[in-house]
Length: 101
Image (tube, rainbow, N blue to C red; front, side, top):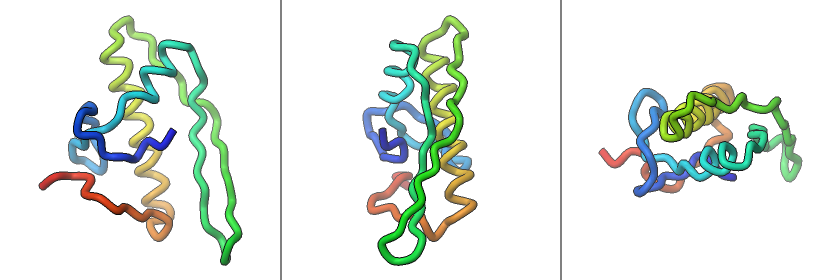
């Protein structure tokens, strides 16, 4: 699932230090069905060559508070995206405004 999309009806989750409306579907599904969340990124190399990297599963939170667990998991996802973007900013291209102001 693409996790870096702006969702006006999502939940506010920190992204680069600012609240960003974030889809919670990934976390809701993973928690409901006890699915592994495997972060994966695709990096453009030269021309039409790409590298796919699949990372170890993200631990699922189990606090007993579903809403808190969804927020915690999506925070972890956004933190992962931040690391990737900081590591290779030239690989990140966004077509819409992630933050409204």
